[in-house]
Amino acid sequence: MLSSIGGTASKMKFLHITDGDKKFIPPFIDFIKRNFDESRHEFIVYSRFKKRKLSGIRFLRLNNLRSLFEVRKKIRDVDGVILHGLLDFHLVANLMLMPRKAKFHWLIWGGDLYCYQHRKKSLKNYVRYLIRKLLIKRIGNVGSYFYGEVALAKDVFGFRGKWEKCLLYTSNASDAYFPKKRLASNSTCTRFLVGNSGYEANNHLLVFQKLHSQKEFRDFKVICPLAYGNSIYIKEVIARGNDLFGDKFEARQSFLPHQDYLNFLQEIDIAILDSSRQMGFGNIVPLLCFGKTLYLRHDIEPAQTLLKIGFRIGDAKSPLITKLAPAEVQQNITLSAREFSTNNLISHYKSFGFV
Image: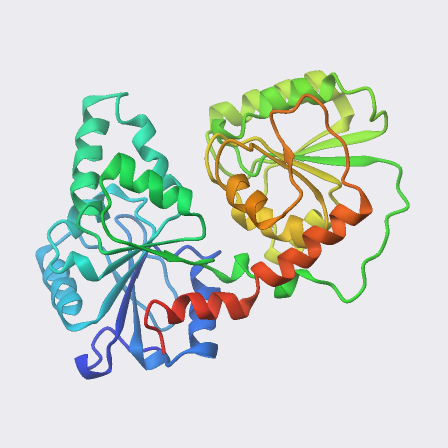
């Protein structure tokens, strides 16, 4: 069983601080239990709002002196502190009060890095950017699969620590994405996946315009996962999709159970993730494993890293959309099995010091 928050310091090795995201954290805890000495890992779930319950894990609001002093003591006692994202600014501010930031390992989630893009929109955003920068300059380690993210952290936040290459979570491990038998679809309909969420960074409207001008695909469907994001923008995407494609457009606004979502991705033919920043890696990995044609922007991560490895990926900025050749599909499947294995994920965390 995972050590409780009141466990003895002698058994503590790593303290994990997380917002308790139910998509990533419970499977990650199971991963720790299966592959490492769980008595060396302790989890704190923080939230300023409603309590998020996860079995065997202490919940703290980090909004009172007692909680802050408790966390300070924990940080002093452990060898490493794993920060599962820095999305919440109030967590960032509280961490500024904590000791020994060199032992922090920041697992980049995306929004916690690219939030710097909003620093000039208001004085409040700029002050928050400066405080975030003060913290990140003192953090000792950053975990990310993409060095480009680390380089960006150095450039915009002054990060001076060590890069720890890491797949981060089990959703980025390929083992579960290889069905024993791949069934060929008899459908003549080409199914396009556009974006992975309802945020403007997905550039849905530009992709819609490109698909609308394509003449090669007559029988097709355009599908957009819009279960979360900017509600105003989501309405705009749906309105434009219906206007351009009519009944060939489908907006998915409900969350699917994980396995149902994977089944949905297996039905996709071509995925266009025209994001202006790194996002949707949890979609990219299964799409590559399933042998789907994938379009990403070649001028940003993650395409830059994946192309260097040898993956065949189309440029989302290209005016022409075509399917991969069978040999290219097989190349992507083979590389996925090698690059995104659970064994690699275990190895990555061993480099953190997990035993």
